[in-house]
Image (tube, rainbow, N blue to C red):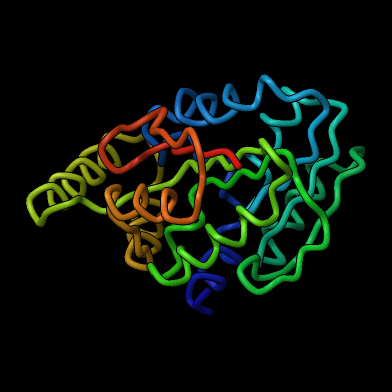
Length: 222
């Protein structure tokens, strides 16, 4: 992952949680859709890729309070915030590039939220294959992320919606500009390509469980 992305999220760590709900349309529905997909698992081993400050981690912990959870992020500052948030929890933290890190364990559930779209398409494919190999049999990979429009028209429609939503939010203009600049680092793939990569790798029961313009929740099982 590029140093620019790392720098941007290190700098954003202080106020990241404060404005997150406003930055993401329908955030509660979006994230809770991902959490509902984990309900059939009992005391699963969980890995959160690009966990940041632990926003999704908190929700999945609420669903699985007895489970072991490992948070992985490249940003020192983001993980520092997560550790403060979960200081009484026996979570494991890995500060690393999850594409390059050598994971030793297998997991029932691997989740990620708004992180993988910072990778190139080639890196995304490598990561999806790596995740598949890290899953236990019948384990699930749930990704709440962004996609690029399948045509120039749809991508421009997504961008207009992003900006329309942002303008309506009651957050400082400085924060809006920071978010706009971070979005310039995004490299989302199309939904069509993403589904094709999952199928080629071998994921089963692949489906889109949520979609709002560019925001999706996609899941597949091993």
